[in-house]
Image (cartoon, rainbow, N blue to C red; front, side):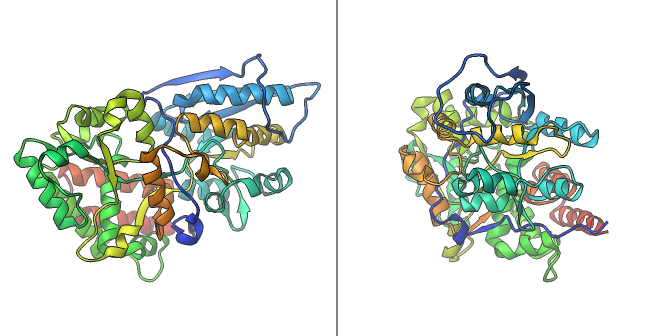
Length: 454
């Protein structure tokens, strides 16, 4: 079946005006799993839900890849129970394991009432297969449509209807993080061009320091470098045209091949740790390289700010952030970033027997109480006015990148269909492992894209 056109979740400045991203509330990125039921203890809340207490309470099931904010989820569930009489059964599993569990649930027609995803291509597939419901009436009746930032709403919208909302989600961008002390020690300037970046990397290597602290076992971490390089070589149109099969776009275009060539040049130059594809970011192996001074830079979502502040508070003062360098004198490219106007987008399954009760919990996750609690652990839920609540200087710098951005590229594996997104991560990891040439990687992506069109 021919794949329908993807929604345009690559955001322009008109969508991100007024938006300032901040780090997510992961306190430690450890593998965790659990199932909990909302506490019997009632909590005070100023939030109003769409459901009143019922004589026969129901239990709403909820999947999320964020066990690290279980305390905030439990608090929201307690307020929800106080307002509605309903319980929430949570299954919280970190990232990669979560994706596997969600795939099995969707394939076996046993999806939970509410589940989190990353919008983009996977969401489109859920819609086309009638696996999630239209939330537009709920959003309009509750007023939540006016509370959530427009740029975030657009990421959960398909054909004019809202299918997902980033309640409890997080604004984020992928900046270049660097150790200010190491840069000062070797008289290094923050690089603005790719040539300057390579000069910085060579100086670091000469002094026994790994330029980039990359742990690429889970593949998406290395993808960030590749996505930025494609943008710097081909502009935003390179990916957009190839992904949407318009204007003659192809994943074999020069920008994709050149990005792969640069990745492999950097691998051969020793810019990444040995055995990079075997290092696990979820256990902090990349961060440990930074903490110990063995590495000087990395590209990561702003979620890492809260993680670093929790794991190594003193190290947080050593961090600087910058935009990814541009190719040559293309100064405008510095205003294009990889990021998102929200994460952890929530949808309600078509199998849900109590969608009113399910939406009431989503509404609680966007309530003022929950937003405040999330902000305390570094998560910026994309509601209007969140900008004024952020005071941390490091986060503010990251927010400014989003506010000043003329183009925000959603991560490829989130934008593309699940099959093509996985192929992208697989081929990118192969590039880092030197087990596939740039041309082979580009050809494999294009072949999969063509297969998806059938």
